[in-house]
Length: 295
Image (cartoon, rainbow, N blue to C red):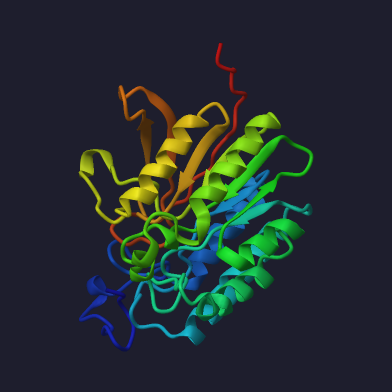
């Protein structure tokens, strides 16, 4: 639910209403809270780069229109740009689509891609100052992209989660590899290995399905797609230095293990959210440290 709106009621008393900055539980935060958090990142954190992991629209997921989705995407991108401008330097930002960005929610029509062109074109134009020419061209075609961070050997590989969640009924026509994302991922990781690059994989919905103590989540259950992607992460474990996701509005780390013997080979960092949902509002700051090569 989303509280303090006309369609959900204004609350019976003060204890039942959201506060100035929002309220814990299944309640959206106001724009001022989002802006305050982003301004903190721009002024206090002053990051080297930002991984923007998707889902920027209202929590009232099924009470939206294409017009309202467009309005919120424009508004939130503007907030990010203003906040990061406080640093006085150009900070790289790498965004991905969440499952709530599209309209209707949880859909991305891989069979009639022209129906999704409004979203790819809109976000592509909003994000074009952060993506290079090749990354932007790829993104506008498929919603995924890769980009080498200028002056480094670190490559960002950004996945389109809408191509592997089973809530997206359009992927059922080709559940093995919708829009060729898995094949593209394999080529990209192989090239990075040859070029001695390190890779950060970013996505909205975490790859595979385990959530540790909270049990098994069946949301990522295009099994052919997920199995192939997990196999690639395992194969290129010396190249993939981190996997970063969002979606769950909670803060946890998953240990990715080999299929054969359960040996750990990578960490998947799942970021919390500024909106509360079931948890308190928060964000993650990652500090990259030198990684000792495998001997």
